[in-house]
Length: 236
Ligand code: ADP
Ligand code: MG
Image (tube, rainbow, N blue to C red; front, side, top):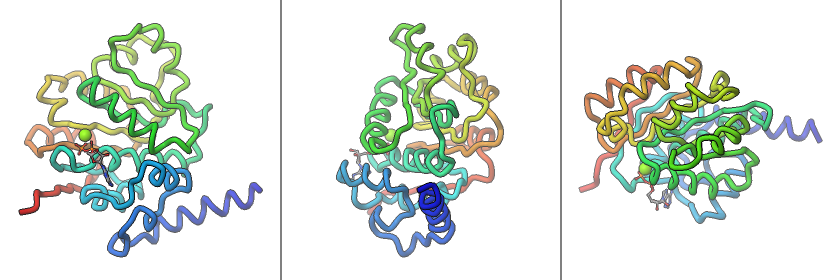
């Protein structure tokens, strides 16, 4: 059984390496793990949106991206799919700790991301948690050390990094900054810099934004490595 499993992982790696986005139309054509494919199907996602299709080839191979596309264009799946796939292909498990961190400007947006994660990730066995404040810090603290994927707002996350013993991001594989323009507009720039200082340098980073402002580009330069800049324009 072990050998069959190894072969499946090797085949997926090969499919990612060989993937030609020009030939892909539906999610079924993308090199995604079986649990992710099942989750997409269950949630009735069939075809990737523009921003998803244009970023996935690069992000599935582990590349950094600055993706800009208007609100409602499907940015959530554009970063959640590579998060799930990276951890799956690294065979991330309960004992590996925090593998992925998604930072969102507001509690409401963080909760929406968490819902999509729970839906599309339902056939994976990663543990996932929300760190958004408004709840007892102690309750969050107790669960934090056991999470593989965290969706967090910047202020509360930094509070935990500074205060919570046993919470470490030393093995983090992937960082997502969602709505980067809003994170900066809300004045979280210094908090973000402090957070980045806690994170390992060798990681994949995905930065998504509705607009590509100068401050977003500055943040990208600070937090991404050789990123691809992918902007989807409105049709018409
Ligand atoms: P954004 O973050 O860019 O504002 P969202 O990720 O919140 O956009 O997605 C906007 C809406 O589009 C959501 O209702 C989501 O369920 C839907 N959606 C996202 N990707 C797809 C897809 N591939 N197929 C169909 N609907 C999708
Ligand atoms: Mg969004």
